[in-house]
Length: 326
Ligand code: CUA
Image 1 (cartoon, rainbow, N blue to C red):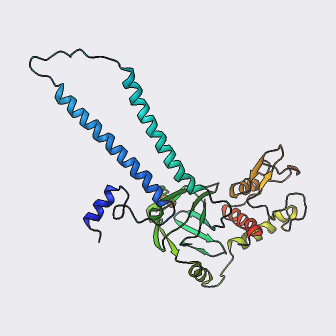
Image 2: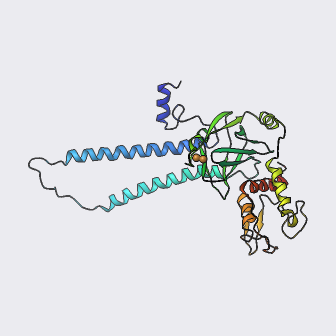
Image 3: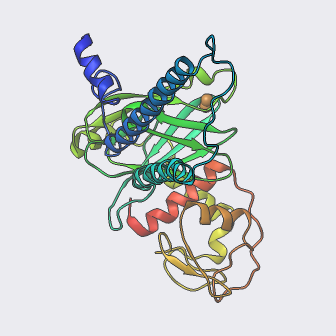
């Protein structure tokens, strides 16, 4: 059990052990620091304002023989500037601190090869398609390995929340969102849904299993063999069955549309001279609204292709696999 002194110490740090859950990801410490700063800043101003209120109420209360207001200055430019500039400076400090932490949650180190997991939120459970094809209702990760979760939802907005990772990200229907971090401690941590999504929102639970090393993860991923169709296989099937392969080659050869080989993660030149990063959301847009961003050198002739979210996830991972072999 947690003892009081430890709880107290945790409270004084506003983020220490015993008060907050343990820190199990690369971004947890930064989040705690921002939280601690906000907490103590707020506590300071609360104390200051309450203390001044009490002092003024006592000092300037109505007393016998003192019924009229005393003459006092009604304006002071120095004071106005001071109490505007100090809060403004503090707000900029908060902005800088929290932006730094936020960017660490959204941007992968260039060149890092992440463990990528496709996460699907649905009423009312989570589903995780791991790199290599294993699907599970639990999230499996490797301690020390950079991780990228790509979130989708098949119905309403859900939110993946892991308190020990200090991470929360909405899963939004019709687009992909991302969460980037490195788990730091092996263990099993609860996953919650943090966006009210209907009747069984509160039971939309799962867990994140952080393996101590890659070998342990690989052993789990190999368990039970390859039962059923993996997400990548589904993507490949959809790619062929829905006619994508008629115009887009997978071996780099030319066609009516650009080849999808080596496409993933590239800056693609568009008609009109701009470029776009080929990521999950660009692939989705190119499937459901092909005319929105047409690759340079090609005609705007592709018809919108009605794929459901899982099929789009499949095509995305298939295109990734043609680049990375994962
Ligand atoms: Cu899903 Cu709340």
